[in-house]
Image (tube, rainbow, N blue to C red; front, side, top):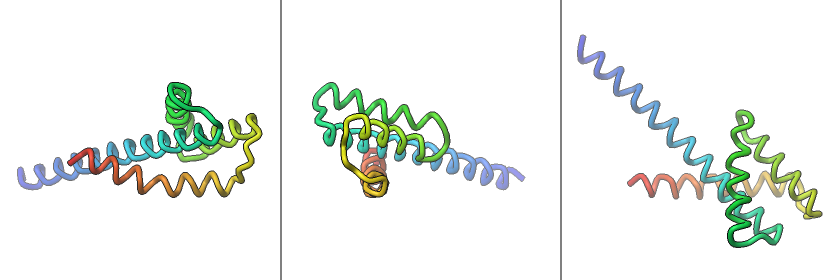
Length: 108
């Protein structure tokens, strides 16, 4: 029976690691998105870093990407930045594999 218990614990540990990795990937994607959006809005240095952190924190409002999208959309609208919803979502999609690669590279 201990072989079964060991396997079950190993599966639980793998699941927990996968969830942690996914969380890190999404946080990294959101940071990269924040850096991109900051650049589009003309922010740099500490202001850009601060904005990127705001985007990361915005993801804690609700499950999924909509809270992050709404943050960037709202901020672009306030600044008069002409980007379509599709362009913002496309940037989010393009940054996801970049974030995954960075996180996995750091884990090695």
